[in-house]
Image (cartoon, rainbow, N blue to C red; front, side, top):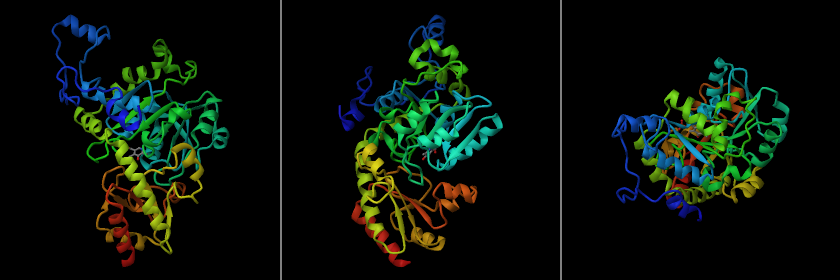
Length: 408
Ligand SMILES: *Cc1c(COP(=O)(O)O)cnc(C)c1O
């Protein structure tokens, strides 16, 4: 199956009980069974069935199966938010005393999370660029995970997954990729050696900006050394599924960060048009970037422009497509604000991956609590605007930016 066909038909054929073309929304907390014996069997995984929505739910299941198939993983666990997915993907394998290696240009919420984890004895060693060399330099006997985004948001730096995966694996460490900004349309990170993928499915997977959610997908390929990852010892009997079994049976269900059935339903609808949307979004972003490149005294950053330092990686990993985010340096904070305020079609909002174009001044919003050093590492300057391109007609978008720029 090719991508758009897979979005509709891979691991999904509607609801077999009723013929409904979409899995119905099972908006319930609990599932009743005909006898105490049956519920005992369900609880003890001796019979298939649902008991309680914090643990499993048919609408959520359907979404998990579809996203796992799309990422070519062996299974997926859906979470209440992207941040919950990032947190759970790590806490499932880490304990006090462990270290993470991560990129310093990560999504600001993830940087803040790594700060919170210090209170639990988990520390993070940051590097401006996650490369085989920086991993080799920062790794210690305590390193238990390498965590990075594929296309940094908003720095838009691109990671060479194969090289980083090899460096991590040579030290027995898994590579966890936040692939939110790349999406399965641009790449399946498992093909390049990544071990675990997380998405904030609030963004491109949902696509309509109508539900917060996250998802963790396991490749099943990482060989867990249960002496080093001792929490996985009792799950070793699940073989390749050990990581997911521990997640489901442990911290994910116990912290209660399950996905609401309604939101799983909205994601399943959004997922079906991911290919159409991403094709349009990448096209619009490239055209807008080319237009902005020719505006004097402004500087545009978009990975799929030929002179971008990551262009070769964009070609080799993403088939030349650069995603739907670009950043623009307007010259000063004042000019950035004027430009943002002058746009007619772009909403001033902190989100990405919506069908409509969104703009934000990161330094005064998402990065307002960050230090100067953190901002520079994240590629955030006082005059930066982040543009999350939408599916509007490109002539209208370019026209809108043109008139807003003329005003300043
Ligand atoms: C938005 C985002 C997150 C957090 O996701 P939420 O769904 O907002 O919790 C994590 N990583 C990246 C790259 C994001 O863009």
